[in-house]
Length: 56
Image 1 (tube, rainbow, N blue to C red):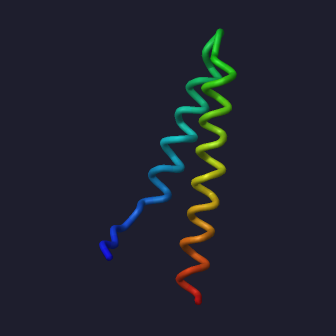
Image 2: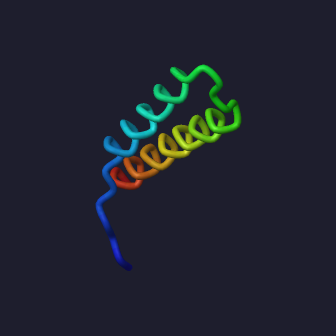
């Protein structure tokens, strides 16, 4: 099985930057914001899973 290193911090920072940029726009898309927040939640779940699997 191929294993690669995932930079969770970089992904998290990119998502946070996008959310911040979107929120600063006058007419931001609620749908886009919802999708970014969902991506942040999924990233957190992936990070939690990754960390828990290291300690098994």
